[in-house]
Image (cartoon, rainbow, N blue to C red; front, side):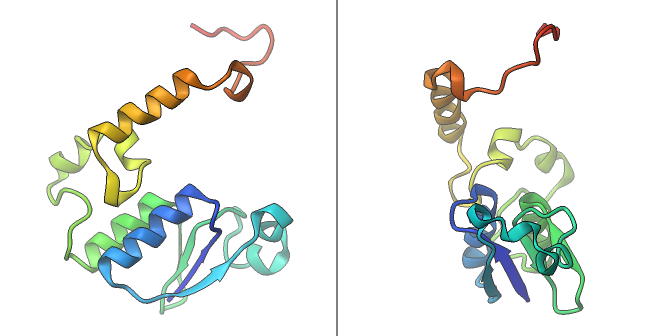
Amino acid sequence: MKYYGFWRSLAACRVRIALALKGVKAEEISVNLMQGEQLKPEYRAVNAQAVVPALVLDDGSTLFESMAIIEYLDETHPEPPLLPKDPKGRARVPRCWRRSSPATATRSSCRASATIWKKSSAWTRPRAPAGASTG
């Protein structure tokens, strides 16, 4: 198995944590996003979306997106569980938990994200294009 990530990517960090919690060994390959390595043909051959993380399985197939990779790891390596086992339980996992680290997926992390968002200066927040409806 090969894991492609970058140390500054939160999504890649989630997968790295999940691999560690599950005890899954994967060759780690760094894709330096700051130098644009994700746009090079070598990486685009791995992931045409040119984003990290990516997990290349032993059969050569590639998984993208952190939650898809984490769900795959949960299915193929059941212990310790990172997500609820039943479909209803998975559906009840709030989106902000799904976007946080599997090791720290708590209600407080959702509150922390909201607090950071509220306290961030207006120029750091995404803005709607001029004239767009915001309601």
